[in-house]
Amino acid sequence: MGKFDIDRPIAELFSVEPYALRIRNVCNSHDIATIRELCLHSNWDLIHFRHLGERSIAHMEEMLGNFGLRLGMTEEDLDAYGLADPAITISITLQDGQEIS
Image (tube, rainbow, N blue to C red; front, side, top):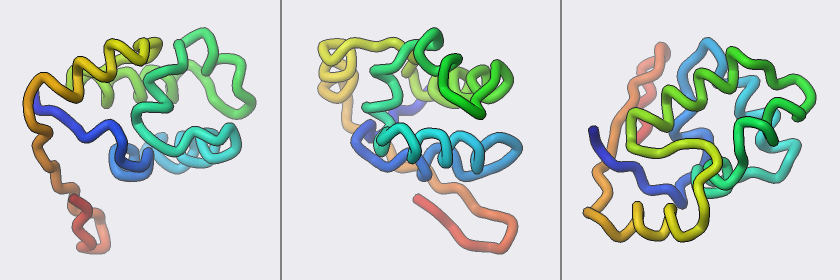
């Protein structure tokens, strides 16, 4: 399990479908710009966001879980996560060949 820079934009973690576009749009409409800001929201908070269903939330939880993150974390949890080890950089190659790291 790698680590992710939690102060990076949401789009860097959620860039591959099936739910990426919906997740990015909903987060943008609720002023959630970074992974840190998303992790501060609980599953219960997100289920009340318009246009965000259980499958999208499950996808978020899975993607966050790949990096040792979860929904509903506290600021202290996130600070400890950021200090534990240096973050690694991940690269994602999109279907059009564009690479995001």
